Image 1 (cartoon, rainbow, N blue to C red):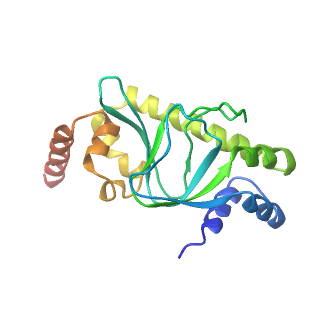
Image 2 (cartoon, rainbow, N blue to C red):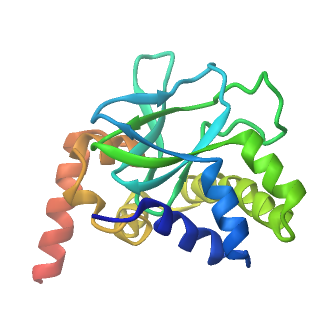
Length: 200
């Protein structure tokens, strides 16, 4: 059984140096939460007052478009953060820009934005951690846009397991197709062609 706060603390200390007392203080202002498979815990347009750190499970960030399709922007797995991509300005009126849904049963550390504000103001390296947590999401979204606009579908498919290890064994193929921006039939044909190429 994993110690969820140990996983969280390893993530923190891999980016900034913190004392044991600071980590304890930080942990006490957070909580472990559980979500069911299929549960949407962040919704577009709704207030967002926390970010989440996954210790078990997979999440997809997505929006439903006007033409009735679902557009998946990314997946989040163990050791990753999840937010609705609202700005980190600590205002009460923050609204999520994407939906976040559990693809598996999930356990997460819930981190209130006010806790992040407290850490950035009170801890020696807190401001650095807060900046990293915010910038990581911006960089991730920019990388997604750049890949989408500059890489072929085949190139993006071939790097899928590098971006999200074992993701293809854990989620429905239709979600992978949505992430790549193709139909499930197109994805099936793509996988067959890649296997055929490997055998030659």
